[in-house]
Each structure stands twice: as structure tokens, then as C-alpha cells.
Length: 296
Image 1 (cartoon, rainbow, N blue to C red):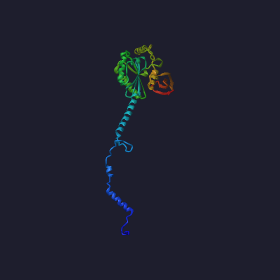
Image 2 (image 1 turned 90 degrees about the vertical axis):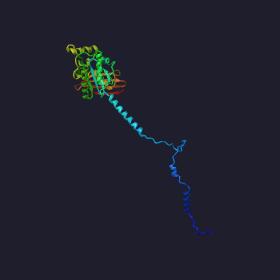
Image 3 (image 1 turned 60 degrees about the horizontal axis):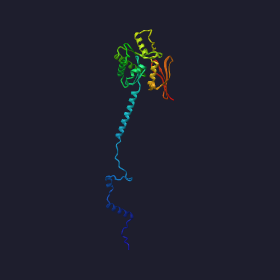
Image 4 (image 1 turned 180 degrees about the vertical axis):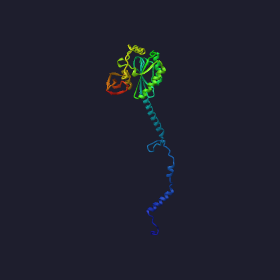
């Protein structure tokens, strides 16, 4: 007969007793597994991911920032160095124009006549400061016999900043007074010849210089009025300088002198490649009244 005095265990109680027995017999290896070092597999497969060391990206970002800063600084310096701040036109007998940047360094030198081309033939004035360039220029003119006793140097400075133009004119005058004491330096508005009397040859210019020195009214060539301080030839050079071209690279379509509201202006049109340029220059100041370019 069954013993009704014994207690019957429920299923939940039996499961609880089994779980306690298993917990006592089986060690807890979760903590040990978490603290154990991970040894990379010799054969990398798709199951266990490759372990990469964490990289510090700050050095690379810093180098990239420094390179970007240097690039911006270099671009700004290149712009300020190669942009034309003012153009100085010097006419003694050789005519030469010097394009200066804001640091007063010559970035381009162009002849205004054949004698100017002869002087610049074996003379490189680019990347020289203004004082050094004038020293070399006067020395080259003297060696080639272009400087004579009492010769007159006509100087014209063209630029957007009038104060800067006057400053450059004073510096050029002081340099000429120091390097060529016998030479008379005057502004171009009182010395430039008119458009219909541009220099034709070395002989013609020499005769003109001699007549100025002797002050003979019978042979002295007419002087340009103060209303046209810039000659048409100088206006051509200013237009070429602004376009960044040389005379050999362009074809001239229009070279005219006109009057607009009582002001004398030069109208110039020229073509380089497939680009057409149209500009107007004030004959009294050398400032651009219009400068347009159009692609064909």
C-alpha cells in the first residue's frame, strides 16, 4: 500500500533542486572567458573579424590643415606679386614702360620704341626692385650712348591709386637726380609729343633732344598739350599690360583719338586668338574708362 504520509514534490521543486545541484557542480567560466586575452587566429576567416589597432587621426588632420593654409597663403602672395599696381613710362630717347607690383618690384618691362627695344635687348629687369631696375636701366642707356648732357627724361605713372602714383614719380625723380645729375626729369604732361608726331627713328629723336637743349623755336618739335598727357603709343602699352599680352600676340583693329564731353579719350580694339578686346583710356590721366573682352 502506498505511504500517504510522504510528501510529493512538485515539478517546480524538482527543477529547482536540480538547478542548485548543477550550479554547485559546474564552475562559472563566464568571468574567466571575459578576462582571457584574445589570440588572433593564424588563418583569418569570415567568422572571426580581423583585429586592427585603433589609429589616431589628429596628426593627419593637422598636416592637412597646415598644407591648406600654406596653399592659401601661396595663392594670395602670387596674386599680390603678379598683379600690376602701376605702370611707369620713361621716355628719354629710348622709351620703356615698367609694370610694378604693390611691393615696387618690376614684373614686366616693355619697350615703347625701337631704341627701347635696343636697350632691353640684353637687359632683364624683371624681379628687380624699382631702385635697382632704374640703376641698371640708366647704366645700359649710358653705355649705348643714349644719355647726353642736359637731356630731358619724361616720366608718366599710371595706376588706380593717385597717391601711389605720385609716390612712385617722386622716387623715380630722386633716382634720376642721383644717378644722372645732368638730366632734367619732368612729368609726361609737359613733355609727351602729340599722337601725330610719334618717334620714327633714332635720328629723329636725337634731333628732337638737341632742339630742346638749344631752345630754338624754328626747329623745336611741337609739344603735346596738358589735355593729352598720355600718347596713343603709351595707351596701347597700357591696354596690352592690362590684358597681359605683348604687341606680337595681338592684331589691332582700331586705334583712334576721340572727344567725349570735352575729354580726350583713346578708343582701342584688338584681337588675340579668339578673344576680342575693346577699351577706352583717358588721355589726360591714363585711366581706363572701359575695358571689355569677348570670346568669339
